[in-house]
Image 1 (tube, rainbow, N blue to C red):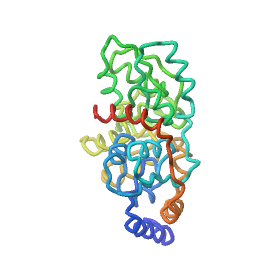
Image 2 (tube, helix red, strand yellow):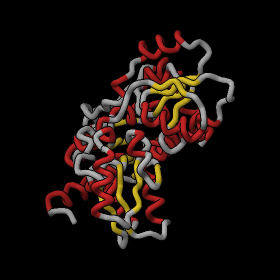
Image 3 (cartoon, rainbow, N blue to C red):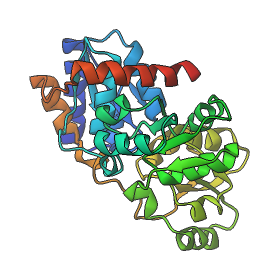
Length: 306
């Protein structure tokens, strides 16, 4: 599947993992060769759980900055490496701790639910974290009389509000990659594949979600394809998921809903950078202890809910 040069680097990464007592965690949006050398490939919830429970001394996080920060918060005694330090998240950048404090002042007493796609500083200002896999469950855990501020993804917030019947105060942020997917893209894909079911991520805009047969996290999409009796699916999330779909459901036909579904930040991490990170144990991620302590409380509340 991979050329000789790439395979050689992958083999070296596997050797270095053992030498450094390291674990590689990779998000489903990563390049195929990076996913292949990972010890765990999954969505934000699964990655967080794995980071919290690993016995490895070194965590190499093939993802973006907020993910590596969360790993460091959950495993403060571990060395956490982010192979590409510039791998950020435009969604996470739509909110700061200061701007969240201002919003909290406008709604005293409100519970702040923050999507995991956020900085450590923002998590520290939040009451509980959620992922796309458990956002509905998190909202349902909050007493119905409590006001809820949901940050920073307005599309995920809109989906959760409709699923739970709760009124949420939504932050005006969104994922640039998922926002590119339009209803016209879905209609075009359906015209080309009329028998395929449409599965989309809840970060997609509401009018796209309305056209879907199913709305799931990345892991949820994979599980649906594997277990559903159907054999054709239109996939409305980042292109990296197609690698695992091909591996886990090789006899099913999955079509990416749009060629626009590529996250440039996720693709910054290469197999060469993973190898270099293991060789040098750099770049390391650090989080201010006071911020980490507050953020940990919000993350642990999420993990307790599941």
